[in-house]
Image (cartoon, rainbow, N blue to C red):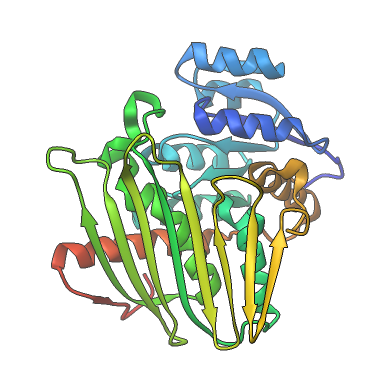
Length: 341
Protein backbone atom coordinates (compact mmCIF):
# COMPACT_ATOMS: atom_id res chain seq x y z
CA UNK A 1 0.00 0.00 0.00
CA UNK A 2 1.26 3.46 -0.88
CA UNK A 3 1.65 6.37 1.51
CA UNK A 4 -1.66 7.85 0.42
CA UNK A 5 -4.22 8.09 3.18
CA UNK A 6 -7.30 7.37 1.04
CA UNK A 7 -8.38 4.07 -0.53
CA UNK A 8 -10.05 4.33 -3.97
CA UNK A 9 -12.86 1.79 -4.21
CA UNK A 10 -15.22 0.47 -6.86
CA UNK A 11 -18.39 -1.47 -6.02
CA UNK A 12 -19.45 -4.45 -8.12
CA UNK A 13 -23.20 -4.99 -7.76
CA UNK A 14 -25.65 -2.13 -7.17
CA UNK A 15 -28.40 -4.10 -5.45
CA UNK A 16 -29.54 -4.13 -1.83
CA UNK A 17 -26.13 -4.80 -0.23
CA UNK A 18 -24.26 -2.69 -2.76
CA UNK A 19 -26.41 0.31 -1.83
CA UNK A 20 -25.77 -0.29 1.89
CA UNK A 21 -22.02 -0.44 1.28
CA UNK A 22 -22.09 2.72 -0.83
CA UNK A 23 -23.80 4.56 2.02
CA UNK A 24 -21.20 3.24 4.45
CA UNK A 25 -18.26 4.53 2.43
CA UNK A 26 -19.93 7.94 2.23
CA UNK A 27 -19.33 8.32 6.01
CA UNK A 28 -15.62 7.52 5.74
CA UNK A 29 -13.08 10.25 4.85
CA UNK A 30 -10.42 7.58 4.29
CA UNK A 31 -12.44 5.89 1.54
CA UNK A 32 -13.12 7.36 -1.88
CA UNK A 33 -15.86 5.49 -3.68
CA UNK A 34 -15.37 6.35 -7.35
CA UNK A 35 -17.22 3.77 -9.47
CA UNK A 36 -19.97 1.17 -9.58
CA UNK A 37 -20.48 -1.72 -12.00
CA UNK A 38 -23.73 -3.58 -12.59
CA UNK A 39 -25.21 -5.37 -15.61
CA UNK A 40 -28.43 -3.48 -14.90
CA UNK A 41 -27.70 0.05 -16.16
CA UNK A 42 -30.61 1.55 -14.26
CA UNK A 43 -29.31 0.23 -10.91
CA UNK A 44 -25.73 1.33 -11.59
CA UNK A 45 -27.05 4.70 -12.71
CA UNK A 46 -29.10 5.21 -9.56
CA UNK A 47 -26.14 4.58 -7.29
CA UNK A 48 -23.82 6.64 -9.47
CA UNK A 49 -26.20 9.60 -9.42
CA UNK A 50 -26.67 9.44 -5.66
CA UNK A 51 -22.95 9.34 -4.77
CA UNK A 52 -21.32 11.05 -7.75
CA UNK A 53 -19.78 7.86 -9.19
CA UNK A 54 -18.97 6.64 -12.67
CA UNK A 55 -21.22 3.77 -13.77
CA UNK A 56 -20.05 0.77 -15.78
CA UNK A 57 -21.91 -2.22 -17.26
CA UNK A 58 -19.28 -4.78 -16.19
CA UNK A 59 -16.37 -5.30 -13.81
CA UNK A 60 -14.05 -5.57 -16.82
CA UNK A 61 -15.08 -2.13 -18.05
CA UNK A 62 -14.56 -0.64 -14.61
CA UNK A 63 -11.12 -2.21 -14.22
CA UNK A 64 -10.06 -0.92 -17.62
CA UNK A 65 -11.17 2.66 -17.06
CA UNK A 66 -10.61 3.29 -13.35
CA UNK A 67 -7.54 3.62 -11.12
CA UNK A 68 -8.61 1.76 -8.00
CA UNK A 69 -7.00 0.34 -4.88
CA UNK A 70 -9.80 -2.05 -3.98
CA UNK A 71 -13.10 -3.50 -5.11
CA UNK A 72 -16.15 -4.34 -3.02
CA UNK A 73 -17.95 -7.34 -4.50
CA UNK A 74 -21.69 -7.36 -3.73
CA UNK A 75 -22.81 -10.01 -6.21
CA UNK A 76 -24.81 -13.22 -5.71
CA UNK A 77 -22.54 -15.96 -4.35
CA UNK A 78 -22.03 -17.97 -7.58
CA UNK A 79 -20.37 -14.93 -9.19
CA UNK A 80 -17.83 -14.30 -6.43
CA UNK A 81 -15.07 -16.48 -7.86
CA UNK A 82 -14.94 -14.83 -11.29
CA UNK A 83 -14.98 -11.33 -9.83
CA UNK A 84 -12.38 -12.05 -7.14
CA UNK A 85 -9.99 -13.71 -9.61
CA UNK A 86 -10.25 -10.75 -12.01
CA UNK A 87 -9.74 -8.19 -9.24
CA UNK A 88 -6.76 -10.06 -7.80
CA UNK A 89 -5.17 -10.33 -11.25
CA UNK A 90 -5.57 -6.55 -11.56
CA UNK A 91 -3.67 -6.07 -8.29
CA UNK A 92 -6.65 -4.85 -6.28
CA UNK A 93 -7.55 -5.61 -2.69
CA UNK A 94 -10.96 -7.19 -2.20
CA UNK A 95 -13.94 -7.10 0.10
CA UNK A 96 -16.45 -9.79 -0.86
CA UNK A 97 -19.87 -10.41 0.64
CA UNK A 98 -20.69 -13.51 2.64
CA UNK A 99 -20.93 -16.37 2.06
CA UNK A 100 -17.42 -16.57 0.58
CA UNK A 101 -18.79 -19.07 -1.99
CA UNK A 102 -21.13 -22.05 -2.15
CA UNK A 103 -18.33 -24.64 -2.39
CA UNK A 104 -14.75 -25.07 -1.25
CA UNK A 105 -13.36 -25.40 -4.78
CA UNK A 106 -14.33 -21.81 -5.56
CA UNK A 107 -12.99 -20.62 -2.21
CA UNK A 108 -9.62 -22.30 -2.69
CA UNK A 109 -9.37 -20.83 -6.20
CA UNK A 110 -10.03 -17.34 -4.80
CA UNK A 111 -7.48 -17.74 -2.02
CA UNK A 112 -4.90 -18.93 -4.56
CA UNK A 113 -5.66 -15.96 -6.84
CA UNK A 114 -5.28 -13.49 -3.98
CA UNK A 115 -1.96 -15.02 -2.95
CA UNK A 116 -0.70 -15.01 -6.55
CA UNK A 117 -1.75 -11.39 -6.98
CA UNK A 118 -0.12 -10.26 -3.75
CA UNK A 119 -3.33 -8.61 -2.58
CA UNK A 120 -5.54 -8.87 0.50
CA UNK A 121 -9.09 -10.20 0.84
CA UNK A 122 -11.71 -9.89 3.55
CA UNK A 123 -15.11 -11.59 3.61
CA UNK A 124 -17.92 -9.37 4.91
CA UNK A 125 -19.20 -11.28 7.94
CA UNK A 126 -20.89 -8.21 9.36
CA UNK A 127 -22.06 -9.76 12.65
CA UNK A 128 -18.49 -9.64 13.92
CA UNK A 129 -18.92 -5.86 13.84
CA UNK A 130 -22.21 -5.79 15.74
CA UNK A 131 -21.64 -4.61 19.32
CA UNK A 132 -23.91 -7.21 20.90
CA UNK A 133 -21.67 -9.98 19.55
CA UNK A 134 -18.45 -8.07 20.18
CA UNK A 135 -19.39 -7.98 23.88
CA UNK A 136 -19.65 -11.78 23.99
CA UNK A 137 -16.26 -12.18 22.31
CA UNK A 138 -14.62 -9.71 24.72
CA UNK A 139 -16.12 -11.30 27.84
CA UNK A 140 -14.97 -14.72 26.69
CA UNK A 141 -11.43 -13.57 25.87
CA UNK A 142 -11.17 -11.71 29.18
CA UNK A 143 -12.07 -14.91 31.05
CA UNK A 144 -15.13 -13.39 32.67
CA UNK A 145 -17.38 -16.25 31.63
CA UNK A 146 -14.94 -19.07 32.36
CA UNK A 147 -14.71 -22.08 30.04
CA UNK A 148 -17.40 -21.89 27.35
CA UNK A 149 -20.04 -24.62 27.56
CA UNK A 150 -22.82 -23.70 25.14
CA UNK A 151 -23.73 -21.19 22.44
CA UNK A 152 -27.34 -20.89 21.33
CA UNK A 153 -28.42 -18.44 18.63
CA UNK A 154 -31.48 -17.71 16.54
CA UNK A 155 -32.06 -15.62 13.42
CA UNK A 156 -35.55 -15.77 11.91
CA UNK A 157 -37.45 -13.71 9.36
CA UNK A 158 -40.22 -13.72 6.82
CA UNK A 159 -39.39 -15.01 3.35
CA UNK A 160 -37.15 -12.37 1.72
CA UNK A 161 -38.65 -10.83 -1.38
CA UNK A 162 -36.20 -8.03 -2.09
CA UNK A 163 -33.45 -9.84 -4.00
CA UNK A 164 -32.93 -9.38 -7.74
CA UNK A 165 -35.10 -11.94 -9.58
CA UNK A 166 -35.62 -13.55 -6.14
CA UNK A 167 -32.18 -15.17 -6.37
CA UNK A 168 -32.11 -15.68 -2.59
CA UNK A 169 -34.97 -18.17 -2.95
CA UNK A 170 -33.05 -20.21 -5.52
CA UNK A 171 -30.90 -22.75 -3.69
CA UNK A 172 -28.58 -23.06 -6.67
CA UNK A 173 -27.67 -19.40 -6.24
CA UNK A 174 -28.00 -18.76 -2.49
CA UNK A 175 -27.33 -22.16 -0.94
CA UNK A 176 -30.63 -22.00 0.93
CA UNK A 177 -31.49 -20.63 4.35
CA UNK A 178 -28.53 -22.28 6.07
CA UNK A 179 -25.95 -20.80 3.67
CA UNK A 180 -27.50 -17.37 3.28
CA UNK A 181 -28.91 -16.68 6.76
CA UNK A 182 -27.68 -19.18 9.34
CA UNK A 183 -24.06 -18.82 8.20
CA UNK A 184 -24.01 -15.61 10.28
CA UNK A 185 -24.47 -17.60 13.48
CA UNK A 186 -22.31 -20.48 12.29
CA UNK A 187 -19.44 -18.04 11.80
CA UNK A 188 -20.12 -16.47 15.21
CA UNK A 189 -20.16 -19.90 16.87
CA UNK A 190 -16.81 -20.78 15.30
CA UNK A 191 -15.42 -17.33 16.22
CA UNK A 192 -16.33 -17.96 19.86
CA UNK A 193 -15.69 -21.70 20.21
CA UNK A 194 -13.16 -22.76 17.55
CA UNK A 195 -13.38 -25.40 14.84
CA UNK A 196 -16.41 -27.70 15.15
CA UNK A 197 -15.87 -31.43 15.46
CA UNK A 198 -19.32 -32.89 14.82
CA UNK A 199 -22.33 -31.73 12.86
CA UNK A 200 -26.06 -32.40 12.68
CA UNK A 201 -28.72 -30.35 10.89
CA UNK A 202 -32.48 -30.64 10.54
CA UNK A 203 -34.39 -28.71 7.87
CA UNK A 204 -38.11 -28.17 7.46
CA UNK A 205 -39.59 -26.82 4.24
CA UNK A 206 -43.15 -26.00 3.25
CA UNK A 207 -44.37 -28.49 0.62
CA UNK A 208 -44.05 -27.05 -2.85
CA UNK A 209 -41.56 -24.37 -1.81
CA UNK A 210 -37.98 -25.48 -2.46
CA UNK A 211 -36.22 -22.32 -1.35
CA UNK A 212 -37.14 -21.00 2.13
CA UNK A 213 -36.65 -23.30 5.10
CA UNK A 214 -36.54 -23.53 8.89
CA UNK A 215 -33.18 -24.92 10.00
CA UNK A 216 -31.81 -26.19 13.31
CA UNK A 217 -28.08 -26.98 13.43
CA UNK A 218 -26.13 -28.67 16.21
CA UNK A 219 -22.34 -28.51 16.56
CA UNK A 220 -19.82 -29.77 19.08
CA UNK A 221 -16.30 -28.47 19.64
CA UNK A 222 -12.95 -29.85 20.78
CA UNK A 223 -13.13 -27.90 24.05
CA UNK A 224 -16.33 -29.78 24.96
CA UNK A 225 -18.66 -26.91 24.11
CA UNK A 226 -21.79 -27.35 22.05
CA UNK A 227 -23.91 -25.05 19.89
CA UNK A 228 -27.55 -25.13 18.81
CA UNK A 229 -28.50 -22.67 16.09
CA UNK A 230 -31.92 -21.86 14.63
CA UNK A 231 -32.65 -19.96 11.42
CA UNK A 232 -35.79 -19.46 9.40
CA UNK A 233 -37.10 -17.86 6.23
CA UNK A 234 -40.56 -19.31 6.90
CA UNK A 235 -42.03 -16.77 9.30
CA UNK A 236 -45.22 -14.97 8.22
CA UNK A 237 -44.88 -11.49 6.71
CA UNK A 238 -46.11 -9.92 9.96
CA UNK A 239 -43.24 -11.46 11.95
CA UNK A 240 -40.34 -9.05 12.63
CA UNK A 241 -36.76 -9.97 11.83
CA UNK A 242 -35.53 -11.41 15.14
CA UNK A 243 -32.10 -12.41 16.39
CA UNK A 244 -30.55 -13.36 19.68
CA UNK A 245 -28.02 -15.54 21.44
CA UNK A 246 -27.05 -17.07 24.76
CA UNK A 247 -23.41 -17.89 25.54
CA UNK A 248 -23.05 -20.05 28.65
CA UNK A 249 -19.72 -20.40 30.47
CA UNK A 250 -18.73 -22.14 33.69
CA UNK A 251 -18.64 -18.78 35.48
CA UNK A 252 -21.26 -16.72 33.71
CA UNK A 253 -23.77 -16.18 30.95
CA UNK A 254 -24.16 -13.40 28.38
CA UNK A 255 -27.45 -13.03 26.54
CA UNK A 256 -28.96 -10.82 23.86
CA UNK A 257 -32.43 -10.69 22.33
CA UNK A 258 -33.21 -8.24 19.55
CA UNK A 259 -35.64 -5.64 20.87
CA UNK A 260 -39.19 -5.32 19.63
CA UNK A 261 -39.17 -1.83 21.09
CA UNK A 262 -36.57 0.32 22.80
CA UNK A 263 -32.80 0.07 22.61
CA UNK A 264 -30.51 -2.92 22.46
CA UNK A 265 -29.51 -4.56 25.74
CA UNK A 266 -27.00 -7.28 26.53
CA UNK A 267 -27.42 -9.05 29.88
CA UNK A 268 -24.47 -10.57 31.75
CA UNK A 269 -25.11 -13.03 34.60
CA UNK A 270 -22.28 -13.88 37.04
CA UNK A 271 -23.07 -15.46 40.40
CA UNK A 272 -25.80 -13.37 42.05
CA UNK A 273 -25.09 -10.36 39.83
CA UNK A 274 -26.96 -9.29 36.73
CA UNK A 275 -25.37 -6.52 34.65
CA UNK A 276 -27.26 -4.73 31.90
CA UNK A 277 -25.18 -3.27 29.09
CA UNK A 278 -27.44 -0.86 27.26
CA UNK A 279 -27.02 0.89 23.94
CA UNK A 280 -24.97 3.72 25.47
CA UNK A 281 -22.31 1.35 26.79
CA UNK A 282 -22.10 -1.14 23.95
CA UNK A 283 -18.84 -0.88 21.97
CA UNK A 284 -18.88 2.35 19.99
CA UNK A 285 -19.16 1.93 16.22
CA UNK A 286 -19.06 4.59 13.54
CA UNK A 287 -22.49 6.14 12.93
CA UNK A 288 -24.04 3.32 14.97
CA UNK A 289 -24.00 1.10 11.88
CA UNK A 290 -22.15 -2.24 11.76
CA UNK A 291 -21.88 -2.10 7.97
CA UNK A 292 -20.15 1.28 8.21
CA UNK A 293 -17.83 -0.09 10.89
CA UNK A 294 -17.07 -3.18 8.80
CA UNK A 295 -16.15 -1.05 5.78
CA UNK A 296 -14.08 1.32 7.93
CA UNK A 297 -12.20 -1.69 9.32
CA UNK A 298 -11.48 -2.94 5.80
CA UNK A 299 -10.13 0.47 4.73
CA UNK A 300 -8.11 1.01 7.92
CA UNK A 301 -6.49 -2.42 7.68
CA UNK A 302 -5.45 -1.70 4.08
CA UNK A 303 -3.90 1.60 5.14
CA UNK A 304 -2.15 0.29 8.26
CA UNK A 305 -1.39 -3.32 7.34
CA UNK A 306 -3.31 -4.57 10.39
CA UNK A 307 -4.95 -8.01 10.10
CA UNK A 308 -8.59 -8.26 9.12
CA UNK A 309 -11.06 -9.32 11.80
CA UNK A 310 -12.25 -12.01 9.37
CA UNK A 311 -9.49 -14.00 7.66
CA UNK A 312 -10.10 -15.89 4.41
CA UNK A 313 -9.56 -19.18 6.24
CA UNK A 314 -12.14 -18.29 8.91
CA UNK A 315 -14.65 -17.48 6.17
CA UNK A 316 -13.73 -20.79 4.50
CA UNK A 317 -14.39 -22.61 7.79
CA UNK A 318 -17.89 -21.12 7.96
CA UNK A 319 -18.73 -22.49 4.51
CA UNK A 320 -17.09 -25.84 5.27
CA UNK A 321 -19.22 -26.07 8.42
CA UNK A 322 -22.39 -25.39 6.42
CA UNK A 323 -21.49 -28.08 3.89
CA UNK A 324 -20.89 -30.65 6.63
CA UNK A 325 -24.19 -29.78 8.28
CA UNK A 326 -26.01 -30.18 4.97
CA UNK A 327 -24.28 -33.54 4.44
CA UNK A 328 -25.44 -34.69 7.87
CA UNK A 329 -29.03 -33.87 6.93
CA UNK A 330 -28.70 -35.85 3.71
CA UNK A 331 -27.43 -38.85 5.69
CA UNK A 332 -29.78 -38.35 8.62
CA UNK A 333 -26.90 -38.90 11.04
CA UNK A 334 -24.28 -36.89 12.91
CA UNK A 335 -21.09 -36.22 10.96
CA UNK A 336 -17.59 -36.10 12.43
CA UNK A 337 -14.74 -33.78 11.50
CA UNK A 338 -12.01 -36.33 10.83
CA UNK A 339 -9.84 -33.83 8.98
CA UNK A 340 -9.94 -30.06 8.42
CA UNK A 341 -12.69 -29.19 5.94
